[in-house]
Image (cartoon, rainbow, N blue to C red; front, side):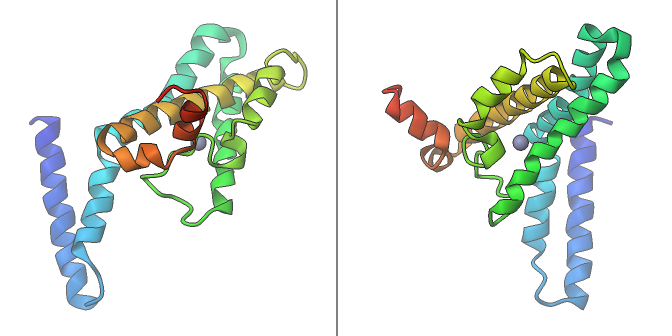
Length: 168
Ligand SMILES: [Zn+2]
């Protein structure tokens, strides 16, 4: 069985589940949950979370082998910068690019992380590497989204910076 077949079968399953739920709750929209589910299993999402979870383990293993477990845990903890999403509504919007938008993903925060790279104390360097890799992952995700959504690009902070630099 191909993974695509499994994905198709699972979409049908979620659809059937949605239909069943609609019987008990008339307000429930099957298309809404189907849309969220298809987004969840999309290649973009799978790549995004692999970069967030698996790639840091590889970086820790390759470059910090002596204490890769501690380094990996610190890398995972740097995902906490996503808590800055809590200051916006909606908290999650698949069409919004986080880069430059949220405070800890802003272009003002980035130089701070760059400076932290040179401080070999209190794990600051490891934290900075984790955060910068996180921002790289989010950037990949943004451009992937821009590819299929021109307005997403035009509304992004990346677009504003590119425009200011005359790169558009
Ligand atoms: Zn993020």
